Amino acid sequence: MKQKLVIGTRGSKLALWQANHIAACLREHYPNIVIELKNMVTTGDKILDVPLAKIGGKGLFTKELEVAMLSGEIDLAVHSLKDVPTQLPEGLILAAVTDRVDPGDALISPEYKTLDKLPVNAKVGTSSLRRKAQLLNARPDLTIVDLRGNLDTRLKKLTTENLDAILLAVAGLRRLGWAQHITQVLPQSICLPAVGQGALAIEARENDAETLDMLAFLNHEPTRQATLAERTFLAEVEGGCQVPIGVHAQLDQDGQVGLNAVIMSPDGKEAIRDTIAGCPAEAAMLGQTLAVRMLNNGGREILAKLFENQ
Ligand SMILES: NCc1[nH]cc(CCC(=O)O)c1CC(=O)O
Image 1 (cartoon, rainbow, N blue to C red):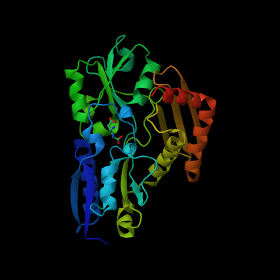
Image 2 (cartoon, helix red, strand yellow; image 1 turned 180 degrees about the vertical axis):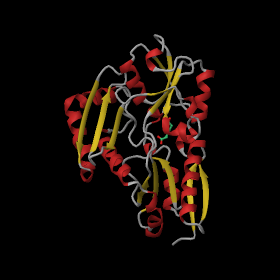
Image 3 (cartoon, rainbow, N blue to C red; image 1 turned 180 degrees about the horizontal axis):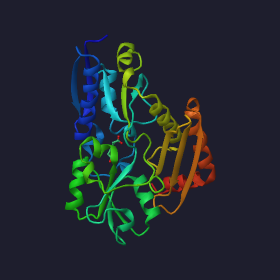
């Protein structure tokens, strides 16, 4: 067993909360361990004024941490699973996927509270293509305004930019103790979450058996299986850019994995929805099968148009 582990993390409030949370779990599990946190800056932290979909590229929030891991500067990295590309660099693996508290998206609208009460043409802030498309699908009259930056910046912009509402992940708000700002958790019939939303991913070196062994207790197997289904779905659909897709997999009482997904055009006018269920051992196959079916049922045309317009 190692006496010391170095955790790499981004410097945002949410990233630090997540890294400190994992550090606390490790200290509790291994009372004599020394944990060091190393703050690092990723490309996604540097470019704050451009919508992520426009920056393009994958691993905007993970790459610098992965380089540090491969060079041995850090032993593990803590990420929001939704920021982790489906293909990891050679030599790195997900040592653990934690249980997720809440995968959903929250509306914050101090004045109007819920989506159906927002006035016609209300201004809603989000820079996620996925949230934008699903909002417009439910409410074509809304005006969607770009909203980048860390969680605290985005909350401030609600007031400073005169927005009627903003959308953020429930998990992030809860972690930072800001759940009281939530005025509605959007139902999944309106807004399906991003792949992996709400779970933490612990990444480590594939050949570092000692560290992998020490991190194993952090893994929540049902969540790993559910998010594996989501990530295989994404890998099959993805064509090199951010795509407006929502997907959520969950284990039901019979132990089956159920997967709900949507592929939308960015304006929310076209939507392909589908669902699949099966046994957890086939999680990857379920995600892939569902993706192929949705691509064949009109998803491919939606994506082709998306790439044409880039
Ligand atoms: N895009 C940044 C990001 N990455 C993870 C979360 C939320 C926490 C999570 O999904 O685990 C957020 C903020 C948000 O989307 O509102």
